[in-house]
Length: 268
Image (cartoon, rainbow, N blue to C red; front, side, top):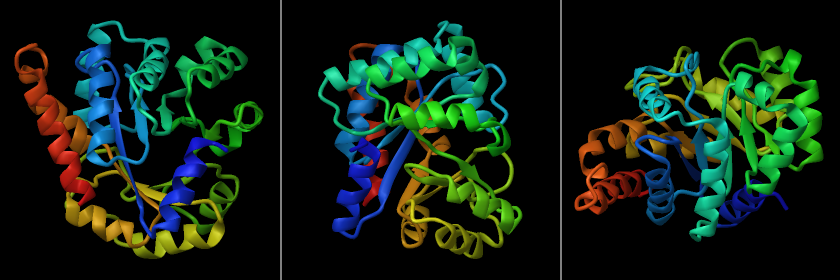
């Protein structure tokens, strides 16, 4: 069984919702990314999105853009990010890994070699925010053959489109809570509750909510309506805040402890 399916099944049996952190791999460096992943697991994360830094991240707000810029200065590639999954697994991390990448790095890698590689390195899911459903057939077929879940993003647009996207989903449906780019928010799309109800009615696949969620109160609010809650910018911002600690060996553990404490507070 795919690790994502197993995780949701286990959570469902306990009546719980998944906490799914996102981090930009290579910010501040690859070895520290592995240590952050370990801290996230210890903090109660149920699966983790591994963000591939990209020079033109259309879906990402300023916090994740800055993290990508820092990682790209270190010449972090998609190959490096995939290797971090294997390194974290060898360090004892058991959580499912979901690779979050734009399409161009996948295309440059080569589709068939890419899926062979991520399967070997222990990736369970894939999110490609700039690959629309109208153009994803080849990627979808290769993903299904490799037992990699191609996880779609669905925004509160037309009900017909929501239903079409959700009906093809594997792993979970990534429900975008707000129109626009990622980033910490206090307000969400006005029709968010109706939107989540529409997605829930369109699929038997788990649904998870992301974009803008940054506090325990918001996590609890959306956990009641979904199978998972994704927290990205708030965690990447916390990493940015403790960068001086992470970059000095004598203070690194303090920085990791602060990241862990923040994620633990989200989990409750």
